[in-house]
Image (cartoon, rainbow, N blue to C red; front, side):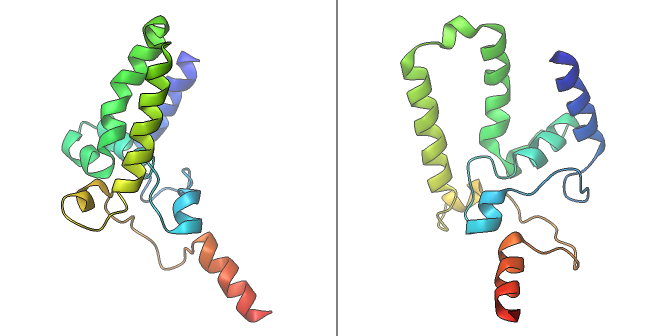
Length: 135
């Protein structure tokens, strides 16, 4: 498992998710237009692996903060087995997902910068909508 994590980190560090087709877009954002708690985390991790902490924080500050906590959880699982840990994590994820969709100061800073979209790419929603119009 450690080898797979290291290999994945090497691939992610060497390939920018903004310009690479290796990494899928968030299906929740494509289908609903809403940001989930994980939106921007692939780009944040890419920037973090390349030593750009500030840029990583712009994409998903929760993911950047969670990475060391998740590492600690895998090395010391007994410290995190209390039911309150799961309830707290779920509360944080749900609250973060809601707040990053609020387009008011200061919550708009929780949303990641818009991904660079090429002229040839389309979202799943626009493809479905367009196909319904042509039928």
